[in-house]
View 1 (cartoon, rainbow, N blue to C red):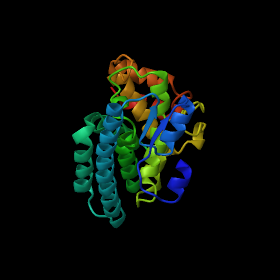
View 2 (cartoon, helix red, strand yellow; view 1 turned 30 degrees about the vertical axis):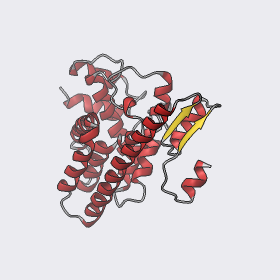
View 3 (cartoon, rainbow, N blue to C red; view 1 turned 60 degrees about the vertical axis):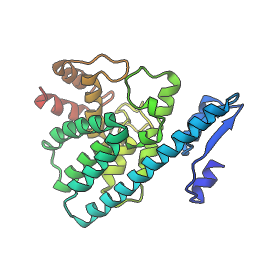
View 4 (cartoon, one colour; view 1 turned 45 degrees about the horizontal axis):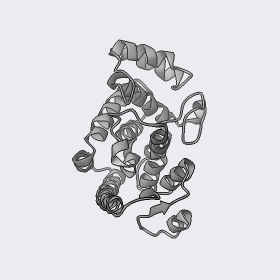
Length: 261
């Protein structure tokens, strides 16, 4: 039913109420864009709270979609897009400051890498934009799962794994460089094939996504994301190098380790 709703292009928010839910069905529902998933028994207060939060999220989502569309149009026209990007940052910062802060740091680390790679100016800009927006799909995930302040449960982890596909769907069709969508969808792929959402291996992972995936991993190391302890930069740099061929591209890991102190 959800697939048919999306196929028909109906722009509606769906709340599922069921007495037969499983983790897998919840994950699939979220992947298809369901706004909320409620298990019976429930009370009216809980339902009203879910509806309120769904409407608030829809308003933020619509505003962000409009800003992304405007940004994409400016990008395609070749005009300076800094003011449009600032608008997106403002929209995100109002409710999800942690996404702005994390995106800015990942953007910075990715910029350090691309300066040492034979890429065109357009490719560099696309990678830096993708780095900033890589977690945009988390806007479609329940707020309490986004911050990473608390250790997520196994169920939370599975739900969070939906954010790359949600984000790629948000960007799809907008006039950005193709690398932007590739980064958003594939920044959690791992070089050894154990990542998600598609389990890509090695150089099958788009190069831009390998760059941002490394930058994202490094930021998690130094900030102590979730249950991880925050590492000093030298330790995080060495850990990235050791992860070459496992979670990250080994050549990029060696290059990154040379100039990050």
